[in-house]
Amino acid sequence: MDSEACEALREIESGRLEISDFAPPGVFTSGLFDRYWLTIADLRWHLTECDECGSSMTAAQEQLAAFDRVRFTAIGNALHSAHGALKCWAEWVKQESAFMAEDIVASLDPECQGGEAGARADLVDYWSQYILDENQDRLARAAIRLNASLGEPIARWLETLVSPAVPRISVLGNRDVITD
Image: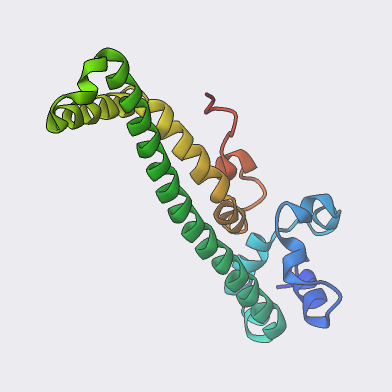
């Protein structure tokens, strides 16, 4: 089975091209897609479908494995960063709502400053929770935006698994949908 994929894999095997040259979005801007009409997804699948290429293209398979390892490392780093960033952000939001609740309680009853500590703490807790509840939708949208921006390495790797016929918007999503 001799095809454009076989030819591209021979170019990779000889060292004239690299498997990463076929990764979106670079494959589309480099002109390589115009020459071969292939992405890394096509080459990935071709290696499993063509017995000749699957058994003889060791350099391409090693490059594909290395490419995936790099992408998986980026995914792991993005997930770790997302977890830490969301944790810090959630803590900051709680602190800000407590700070605002303190101001609200102080403005509602100036005499509360000298009142019973437990009653004042209950009022602050109530207003802090009220602020969080009132802003829950906005906070959720902000968390989604944070996850989306940190999730780009994941989307980039997933994009290498789909053929070019699948619109990029279906992988990367429409970032203009969530506003606030």
